[in-house]
Length: 512
Image (cartoon, rainbow, N blue to C red):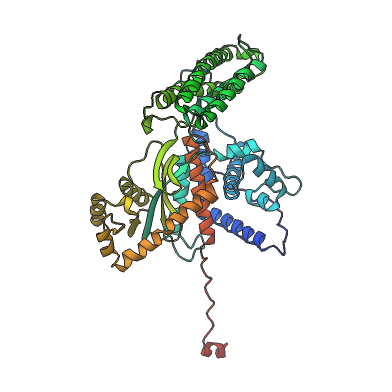
């Protein structure tokens, strides 16, 4: 059930010190002050807190396994709700600032403790004592709302810039006359997926987890885990050296067979220790929630390692290709896909396809991250236009893309809806003819800047590389990056000029 939000209290906030002589600091401080003003004026902060409160009050409370149905969430008191609202505000501001600074959780918590400007923006400053969130709290802040709710917050911000620009202090409203669309690869933070290196990764993870279980007091009969790590490291070195020797194909097959034998032994030992921890965790000093991460880590690798072993056998020993849809690129991130880009320096990338659409002012109007292999670009244009029309209740005036989005069906759809067709044709002769139109040529020249917008988002707001692991975390990190980017762009837009005071005419002045 939606909760009634308590009005935000006006805390006693000490003023920031006046800093003189550092232009870069003053510029950054001005940007943060503008973002703070946009958060308040647009209602984005209130919307974020309201959604977090609704989610908290509708979530079922934890109940024993024997309970027949989920227990409804307990009703919060006014004091508890006020504290939760305050944490939600800090979650929004801390994650925005951390995304803007591109810091990890620990480094951001440390910088927040020593920077009065950051404390002011995150609303953790106080007169007597400053209590900053720890690195674990900062991590919880990053997952405060799921990705669908974050998309709704972004759309609410854009809707406010479109319908009530004067409320945000903008000189002009959000422009929907020109819409530029492109797709790219959101690379995952994985090493190059060499087949036999995946076997090394699996052995290392399984033996390190087994070592933790044995140190906790649960042991099965086996050799020391360090011995298996040493043997796998020797085989890894031997495999890497085969490329510089005569008969390297036979040598690689021989070393891979030894790796497969070692992997089978390691899997059996890890499985026994995993079952022992699952049954006898009470004998250790861990609680069940503390043992669960180790069990999940073992389960994930034990499930994928046989497939990685078969993949290495097919490619190295059998010399048979493996389809991209069946390839395992990482034991720790199964949602990574092979994306063929065909570009210089990036012929093939590993990650997920992301679709981005921006307007003339550089604000991102639509985005989508694909878990599976994305369809062709020509199939992505209609759904993106529908999403923009849904949240804005308006149609864009013109759509400009590269030739990957061009198709006869898209041209007919744009003509039927009255949207100007600025899709780059695939036919060179048709492209030459289209460039004779002034509007088409202008939109295509502007479309080239969308490549720069994608680079800015990926490099400055998502990280180099994106640290989030797993599709759900990458999707959420993308939403936070888009929200931070749009707030940063709104802060840089021209403000509405104040109305000049009209001077009295000469007769009135004389009468006065």
